[in-house]
Length: 597
Image (cartoon, rainbow, N blue to C red; front, top):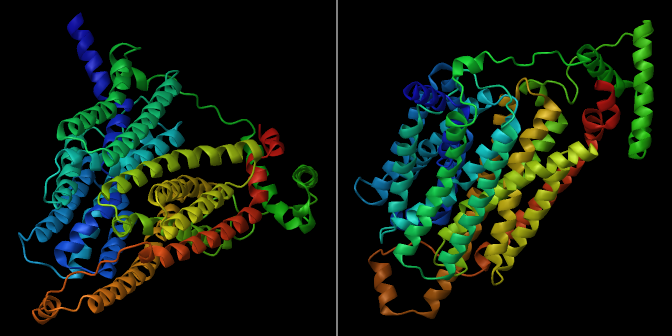
């Protein structure tokens, strides 16, 4: 009897959707290796004698690898998900493994373009981890997509901090060992989990325990972020011995393992049930009341934009909704009487399903794209140059800031999604207003970096991390609301191209050029102040050390420019808010809610 119970419970555990979700969380912890570029770039720069402009090229290659997920999405449709994960692990291992061999001198030095390809290939492995984790968990939790996607993307944001803490334990005088860890660590985790992260049969119904389980996971996420922040600050302010750092890391692993309690308890103690029986549970399939009326409502909404007087948009919110409701009622009655023929335009309206080509000819789509390009592009510039920024201000331990911005990025994603949802649900106000707030916060953060005040690195990292993370919780939701869910994958993948595009312009052209110019000025001043035989001989024998800039001046102009771009992004977001008020009033307004229910 007991043997049968344990066999049945074990089968339920292996096929439990919560086990898949927890494994996907662990998998996503390895999908944030791109955020470690700020830590590994100084090692690459010093080992290969690169200038800042060349390092910026590598950063752009990293951003492209992190953003171009078309191949991963296509392979996930034709290959088993475990095979797609294996492809991503191989890319990660080969790309960063070869970079490590070059940096340590074990293989011949490669030209810059080849290093860019290796960085691209290695970072592109992340897209496979992201795609498989999201596809599996969204299919397993079709009624809870919001919490699932938010938590998984949050763990991807925490990945840099987690890997940095693990590196602190195995820290060696050879800083290139961090690159080795980035190459080998994620590949090992993926191989261990690749047969667990997949859609499972059954277990797709909403269960009474789901709310408690998600609350528990959220609590663990917040606790994990707070713990990592505390540990990083202590390690930065206090000189700890290796034993204490090891204890901190063991506690970190315990926190990461705690979520396994959910599938274990559900499978062995709380209503254990085999997947075959679970699959037979009745799932409500009733059609939404008013489904036909909803379709008619969408048609009337399309017609409404033609019939609505322009002065209606200038009225107060309550009066505007009242006038719109009256106009809709007249259109419904006229359509019922046959007096008017309700028809669609040639293309969809905002709030309906768009294809990518249809969205590309809409001003709203490009407002969102360029606002994202300016906002997230400036944030990514900080992330890519965080190592050089902290070094220029006299900080020796650059890893602390990489870890901090990873944590703030995580909290920005969680907070951005939560607060933007409050805005649209409670006030029926356009979600892009939350993006404008995030961009204004980033503008202030760039000013702190520009001034270089004592402690400015900590405050700037906080503000930039929160604002940058919020973008990636707000933009996907806003895009789905304005342009529909039918072709959401193509729309979202196109919008993510704003990230590397912004990094190419801001980091690859602006930041690197200004840094190298300031470094050359300091090098010339140093040369004139200390003209001696040693410097002459070093010039004769071709000793060419990489340019290095010191002081707040290195990134002052860059940060001011980035702050200005964020202000422009705020303006673009507010224009989008103004243009989409009627859409959100229709989607979330009380009148539409009453009508559709």
